[in-house]
Length: 130
Image (cartoon, rainbow, N blue to C red; front, side, top):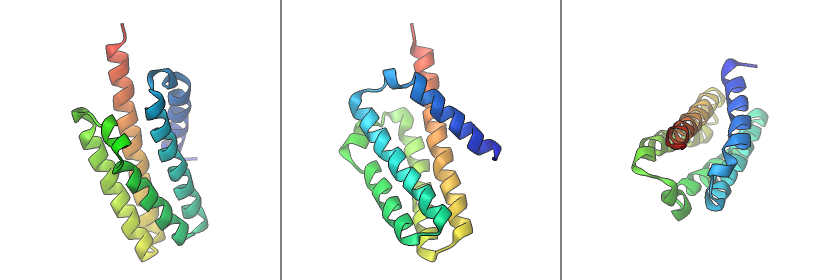
């Protein structure tokens, strides 16, 4: 298991355990939807199911265009969303080309964008705690 995957797993557990209280129900729903699509993208990648990959990348992209997502985006998170959507576009292009290596690299970029944003939000919450 690579260091990045370990770090992502640990951060997911930490965020799930410690961050749930700080989330609103609406935020939790959007993040759960994002997580479900991300998991399906990983499944599609590991099975080389390009039709599923394209479908789930499109679905995840639609999440970032939804009013619920827009409500979550403060000015401090706009750059993170930009990185995330750019990585999703790269993943969509790789899926269209059926380029397994590029898709894997793009998925890593998508995941890294998630991790960076979640780390920022978590740090912000810690800094604001009484």
